[in-house]
Length: 94
Image 1 (cartoon, rainbow, N blue to C red):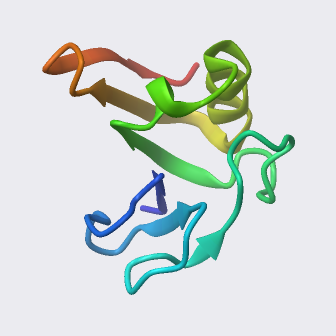
Image 2: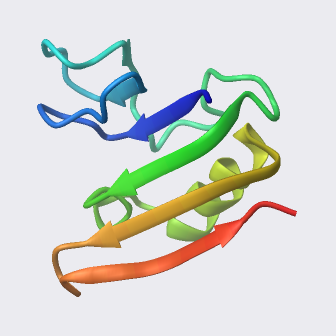
């Protein structure tokens, strides 16, 4: 399973491809997530994890569309925000 950890910072999921705007020991790809399209192929990931990142992006709708683009059919997406202290969406990718 290929996992993408969006805005991983210092807490990347084990085995995931981590992306963040700043370099760090857990970061595999340095990229400003407000710049679209993200540097990944369509349907590249089985699961996209976005914890405490969407609230920092300029256009949440465009970010969710981009998450959908890079998640393979049948894959999954999950996101959470500390503002809400809970997961606010998790759905299988159709």
